[in-house]
Length: 522
Image (cartoon, rainbow, N blue to C red):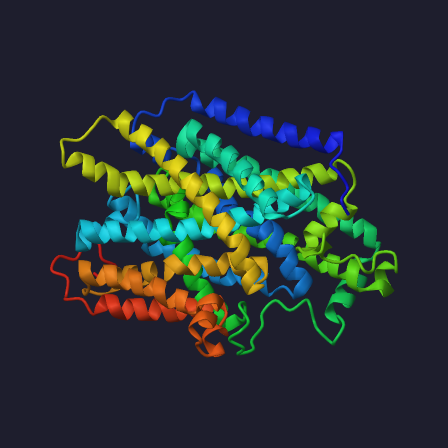
C-alpha cells in the first residue's frame, strides 16, 4: 500500500504548482489600489468564470473525497440533493442578489446595517467569520488527510499538520498576489485539474471492471442485501438520513440558501459580475452544471463498490481491496488512488486533491478578509479620520494571513472531531456549515420578510442559532449526558430546528422603525 510517488508523479505535481504560482504572478501585475478592486475585482469579471469559481468554492475536497465515499456506501441521493441546491439558487438570484447590487454593498452583511444598525452588521459578520473558520477548516482537514497519505504515507497527526501547512501556504500565496481576481481565475484552473483527475479515475476504474453499462446498472440495482444503489430520490421519512426528498426540500434547501446568498465566500464572487442579471445567471447555471460533476464523483464510488465488494463481477483479485491504510480507515477513493492507480495518474490525482483544497481555502481567505476589513477595520479607522485605500488593501493581506493560521488550527481540531463522531466525510463537511447558517438564515428571513427585529434580537438570534446546532453534536450530547435522541437527527433537520428557533428569537425584537426601502414584502 505504501507505494512511493515516482519521478513522473512528482513532475506532474511540480508542473501543477508552477502553473498555480505563475498564474498568481501574472494576475498580480495588475495594481489593486482600492478595496473595491481587491475584494470585488472592479465588478468586471465574466459571468462564465464566476460560475466555475462558485462551483469550485462550493464543492472542494469534500466532493473530491466525500462524493466517491458516499457512492460507495450508499446510492445517488446526494446527486438528487441538488434539487435543493437549484431551488436555493433561484431564490437567491430572484430575491437577494438584486438587493446586493441595489445597495452597492461589498459584503452581504451591510444590508443588516441599513435595517438594524452597525451593531447588527458586525454581529452577522462575526458569525460568518466563526462559521467559515469551522467549515473551511473541516475541508482543509480532509485535503490534508489525503495529501498526508500521498506524500508522507501515513496519517499521523504530525503528517496531517505538515500537509495542512503546505496547503494553507500555497493558498495564501495565491490569494495575496492578486486579490479576488486572482482567486476566481485560480478557482477555474483548480476546477479543471480536480475534475480532470476525477474523469481519469472514472475511466481507469471502468476499464478495470470490463463491464458493459447494462451490467453495471443491473449490478447496482440489485446490490447485496436487496439494496438499490441507483435510487435518486428517497421518499422515506427517516430523520437520520441526510438526503431524503423531504430533507432536500427543507434543510438542504436552507443549507444552500445560506451558502449561495448569506455566505461571503460565494456572494463575493457573485458581486464581481457587472450587474445583478449576470450574477444571478452565473449562480443558477453553476447549480445546474454541478449536477453532472457530482454525478461523476458519486459514480466513482459506485464503481469502486463493484470493484471491491462484488468478486462475482470484478474477480477475486480485486475483492478485499478495502479502506484500511496503516490500520486507519480512509475513504475508498483514497484507497484506490494509493494502491491501484498507475504511475503518472497517481500524481494527477494528488494534484487534483490539492487543487480542490486550494480552491476552497483561497476563496475563504479572501472572503473572510473582506468581511474583517469592510465591516470592522475600515469603520473603525474612519471614526478616527480614515486612511488611504492602499492601507486597507495592505490590512486585507494581513487579515488573510491571520485567517490562514486560524483555518490551519481548525483543521487540526477537525482531525480529532471527525474521528470522534465517525461521520462520513461528506456529511461531516456539510454538517459543520450549519453552525453559522442557522442564525444567519433566521436573521435574514426576519429582515427580508417581516417588519420586526432589532439589533439586540439579531445578536441573540445569531448566538442561539449557533448554540442550538452545538447542542446537537455528539460530543456535547455525550458529555452532558443528554438523551441519544438529541444527536439522532441528520444535519438538514438540525439546521431546520436551528433556523426555526433563531427566526423566532429575532422576530421577538421590537418592530423595526426604519425597514430598508427595497424590502421584498414591499
